[in-house]
Image 1 (cartoon, rainbow, N blue to C red):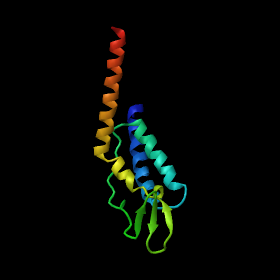
Image 2 (tube, rainbow, N blue to C red):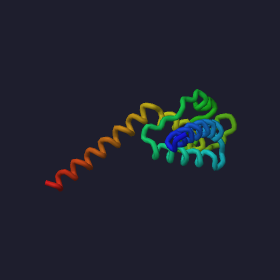
Image 3 (tube, rainbow, N blue to C red):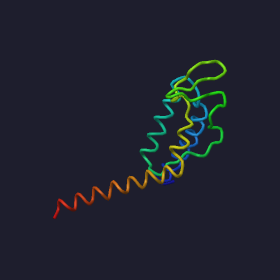
Image 4 (cartoon, one colour):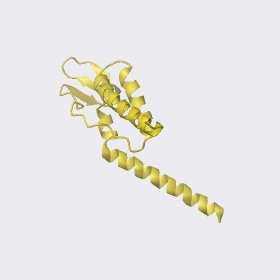
Length: 121
């Protein structure tokens, strides 16, 4: 197995672990949601084409109402930070979002090349 193949397999394994980590951390009021958010951001930084596997379990709880940066539990009255729920990651790292990130990166590269060519003339 070549180094490139090994890296590809490691990334596949990491993505599967990340999928389960998101399920575990979603809605927890611990350090887990923040750690998962950082891991997803790092993964996306490495690969502009990164997308999360679709997950139908990531949806808002019917007993939770979004109020600014907090969710209000309508049954208990408790308020929890919005960042404890990872529902937004599904939208942020969908296939559509990956295409937009790739396009922004391409535009940025073209602008940089255009500026470089102007200075060379």
